[in-house]
Length: 135
Image 1 (cartoon, rainbow, N blue to C red):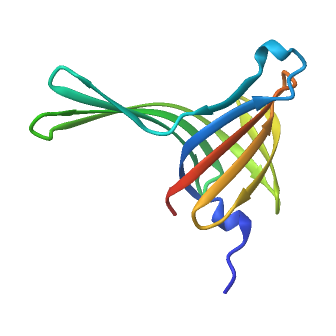
Image 2 (image 1 turned 180 degrees about the vertical axis):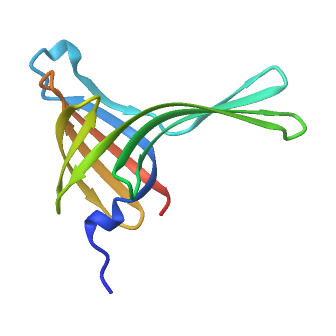
């Protein structure tokens, strides 16, 4: 049985790159930025940060910045700063909404990867390239 793009969209994806382009004001543009998980040593801790986007079966859209701290004996702390909204989907188009303000988006998704393009209200286009963490 084939799985539809809308079904494949459900899950959590770790963002690898973000590109901001086509802005009305070129000062807002940001070339391709690597935002994949990064880790750094700080004293006896290793801190790792990553950005995820999640689409749920209840039509929630969640962007999270995740920080994990791991000490030298393996104890981990996880802190997630999240922004939640909702989405409306069709076969290849989306509307992503926060506080009742919606932005048009398009996507390509398969079992492993997501490319999400959001047309921001300020005229910019944000392109997220992400890898699936779970389904």
